[in-house]
Amino acid sequence: MPACHAGGRGFESRPLRQNLGSPCNIGLSFFYKKIVAKETFIMTYLLLAIFIALSLVINQAAISLLLGILLSVIKEKYSLTSTKINGTNFLKAGIILLGATISLDSVSEISVNYLPLVSFYVLMIFLVGFLLGRVLKISKKHLILLVAGTAICGGTAIASLAPVIKSKTEELVSSISLVFLLNLLAIIFFPLIGQYFGMSEKEFGIFSALTIHDTASVLGAASIYGDDSVMYASVIKLGRTLWIIPVILCFSLYFKNKEAKYDFPYFIIFFLMCVLLGTFIDLNQNIQMIIKKISNTLFLLGLFFIGSQFKLNTLRKLSIQPIIFAVTLWLIIIITTILVFYV
Image 1: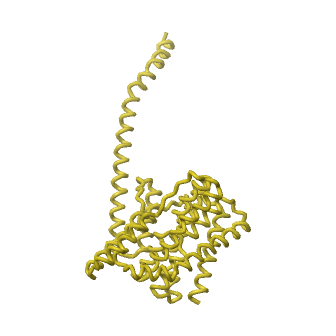
Image 2: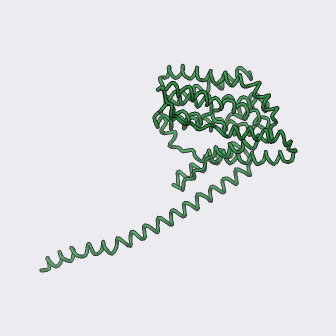
Image 3: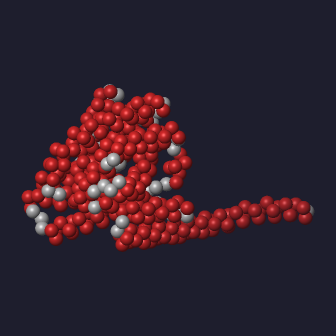
């Protein structure tokens, strides 16, 4: 009887404890998760506000980028809320506003003088890139993405070409990640290269426009060097960016993909509209200074948010062959440009 009683008690008490405990535990768990989520949310945006304030106070493009990277590392380490703010849009807005401070004559003169050089550069990068890719045995579609990203406009060209050539997802992610990392290095180290070779603001603008992948990163590096550097860099780089149209059309025909869609870089049109507006309205120096300050603030915010999207896992996932290819091709372009123009 005691045995039966004990067994019965054990049989009855266990479900009873579960029935009483489960709703309570679920409720506590729910509220705990809510509180923790709210705390991490507040902490993330508090840190974000502090880092942005530091970026704007220090007023240095490279520091803004590094602060963004530091914030990203902190968020990743402490599992804070992710902030998905597209820094490229801030930089594009900065470029568009900058157009109001550049005269139409300057744009025309730079375009006429340097458009043949830009076209030659784009074609040579494709030629050298495909030859190098054959030697390193990079897969065809991965090679196309990496070469187009290097020759034209980085991530924009890669993202636009990927659906056209029907590349694999891992090829797209790898290509964009590589270009992103190389752009980070360019923003930090290219101004130092320019200073080492004694480049003027004009020369550095040309150098950065010919050698850095993304338009945003070109402007980020040029903004560290000076206003004239930004003017030359923006106009020449936009000439490179326009090559995205014939390249996508050619690869659409090659891969027989008539349904392929791509994003046209409409910010170029808005930039030219601001150039026309600034030329015909004839803005005075005070207004131009205000526009330049707003543009510079947008550049700083853009670089900060680009840095904040950096992930350490990106480095771990990259395979060695595409890294060797992308870095080698980039070094060939940098060294050739320096030897031809600055040595």
